[in-house]
Image (tube, rainbow over all chains, first blue to last red; front, side, top):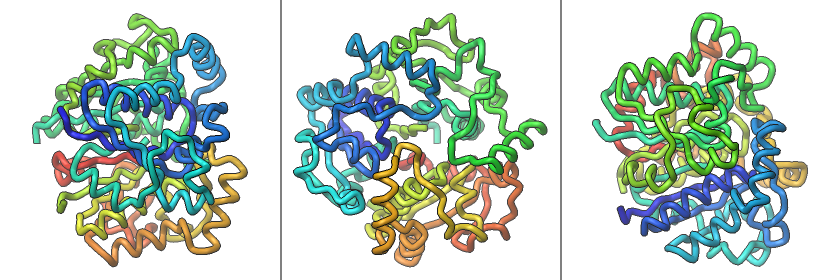
Length: 137
Length: 137
Length: 137
């Protein structure tokens, strides 16, 4: 059970980010290392100047779903930034920004929230992942 | 080949649900246990009162894609509820609702279709999954 | 590190196709076999008559994101067709169309780009994948 879990975080809506954060927190609580690789809109969501902003939901949420998520947030349920910060304090959670996505979105690491530990390429991510679990979110 | 396959079912559109059901049915046919964990809109799609409803498609389907899917359904191709029920009859397919998503969407197990076997937390899902395949849909 | 990586390519927007192509190219560069299984809109994107067309982006891209992706493409960054072709030249990258999705979208293999190596069912894909990494995109 101490195998790393590797998450490719492509999506940047608050519901998928929360799904990722819950997996990361669960794995960290079980003592498993977590390796997160941020691409495209998943990366965009970690910009320091708007990480706390409303990033919307998957289109399929609909009005009722969106209202339920908003209501839950008022009681602190489903806040992915808080969940991920807790996961980082609890265990070994490393967050890397994909260098190609950084190029495409014209970002520097100083544009990103301090939760992001570094910038790296896909080869490094794949080598670290080995043949461990890889989850694309 | 008797390793379990673990599906996190986040999405609730009929096309992604069908993709998940096909993987589950294929694995069950090969004698592999299947563990499905329902989150957010994937969970919402299993509400007893609307599991058979039209849950829409991914936005990228477009008009032509949506028409093709609708046409195929008339001949019984692409019906995820039927595919998943067949998978459950064929093999060992366990479907658990994520307790956190149940909270967020204010659902009780009695609100869900009987195909759902229970409610559990992410830690239990991760422990069961071990380092087996984990597929996020 | 010579374990195959198995990608189920469901999504057909240019950003997700590029994320898939980058994983495939990275794995191929590391000498790992790559097995891609095309379903639904991922399959639709490989139609010979419009593989080079604009397939749009995930809805969450927004205007600023879409502009950044378009700008990067002008300098050759983020072109998934070119990235995937390079991956195929570099290593062992096999692309199979899901037979069920072919049925639903009423496609024949002659409708598809020559990058697609064949058509096969989900059972064959799962047997080839064994308990190796499986990534749903």
